[in-house]
Length: 200
Image (cartoon, rainbow, N blue to C red; front, top):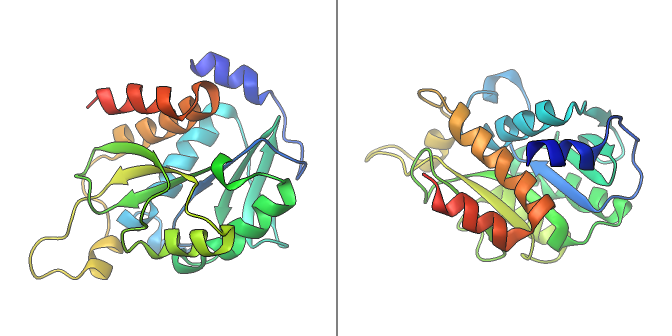
């Protein structure tokens, strides 16, 4: 499947042409946030980019790092998490990507660490990055790759939890999230859900 994905995305960046899909990793910019729970979406996007040999470049028009490669666009917003949609909405419009073909990699409080789940639409569940995306895309009907970070222990506020460093090795779940995004593109959401949800 990875070989098929590599053939699908080709071998070279093509700039900001129209795309069939837009894959977005959510997180906060800045070294102080790089290894936090809120940035596991960025970590998963990095995994996906490494498999495809894709290099992001700054796009000042939309406040994001962007690459488009053979019909698939990739983006890392340079806004803070709570304003992610301000970058993603205009980029999706410029690339002519409808919301249902936007794939968002993000942290999820209501999944335990290590769990990855896929869905389209639904509530943002208090996630301010998703709220911003829904506002700027004008719909909730985009694909979410939800990467579990678990709820904070008693006495720890949610903002402190999501902005604290991940513990342990998260390479397995970020790799699984990258695989989930690839599967959606190659096989469609339902088949991707069947495969990802069946595995631990």
